[in-house]
Image (cartoon, rainbow, N blue to C red; front, side):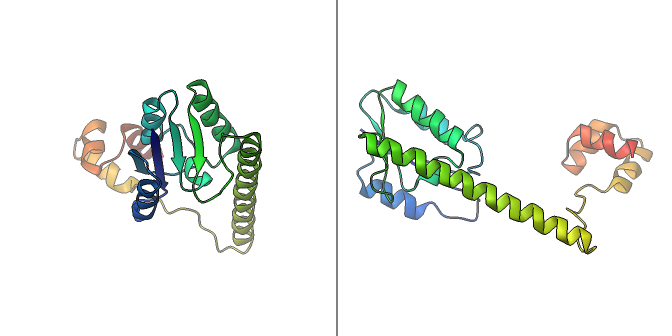
Length: 180
């Protein structure tokens, strides 16, 4: 059985193109989610897909970066599939599969390149922030919690749990704001 997995990074993006490609490739079941690809740990639908596949199945993705962004995650996922005797195939990157030694090599190379690109992007981002800070133009992320509003609610006699519920934040955030 061909089992598809699709992923986009944010809720504003659409899974339609990936779902159509996976269905067109013959996937009988497709798992899809809107989640960051930085880590494979928190992706529920990926975990569901890995649990679902059985001996002789093939997990199919449209592009390798839909499955994993780090070499470590990629190798862990491929290893999980191998232990279950499940194949892997990438639609838009021909030759990226576990059907041949060359395909396995390509997975390793492309995974390393994806991790390298991610590291370079993060370096550029850090450099840009450092330059903006040096020029006095970087203020960082604006605070999302108003400590004065929390203190005002506390003065009205509300407890930390009540303040947290009312403001839609965690209790630890309330305690931090009160301590500041």
